[in-house]
Length: 304
Image (cartoon, rainbow, N blue to C red; front, side):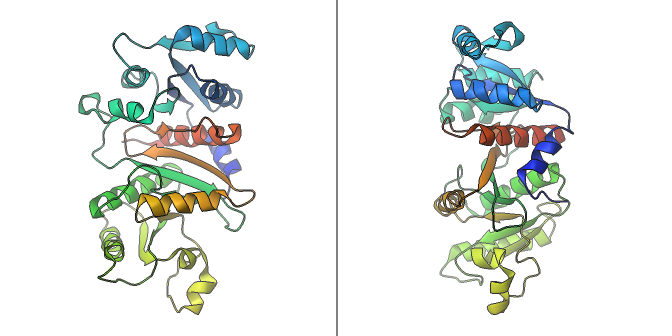
């Protein structure tokens, strides 16, 4: 199967076991709004971690009874993220939502070895786009976390994407490794990495998936252009995910896609044993809801 739009994703979120998010630093209006929206759509429950009175005041401002919510005070000597991770370790939540905490502080307890949330893989950002010119959701990575991945990290980034898509019901995801050209060039090490990644995938090192590289963006999405350039690839126009060579290319690609009229997106951070949602406080409510729905599905369907 494959997802064609976010309506299908939201519908899927109602068919899996409901997840619970631990909100690190919930005394933030955008975080409370996200929690209330997720509950109103019956997508996810929440444990609100932070300064209790500030959280209660935000709930009262929204005509909610604070006693109806699971509010947890940040433990003495801990950050809200550390307390949220303890809640996850205890089995009372299965994914993490960033509230009023710095991103580095959010990640610190996640990657701490003794907390048991590491998989050994590189942590990476997985973004989904609903585009007016593509017939299904398009996934990109990594434009947000891993700056200059070497070959091993690029392999992890692909595995994170493939695992995400398997959790969403994709049977054999098709992944393109982006470069500025579609042939190997010794003067461009990114193209050599792409060739190596394709060979690793063909050897079964990344799970059940198809990896093609190097491939340029236009040939990945436009079979007509592939035909004109005599690029023989049966997956042109059918790729599920595109992997960028570094964070600059990935970030630029993502921002370019977001600028198209009518584009919708959702994202989360993969590579840990639990999904992590890093919604911007400036993100619109519907985007935050999609991110929570995505993380909830992955959390419910991931057995790692």
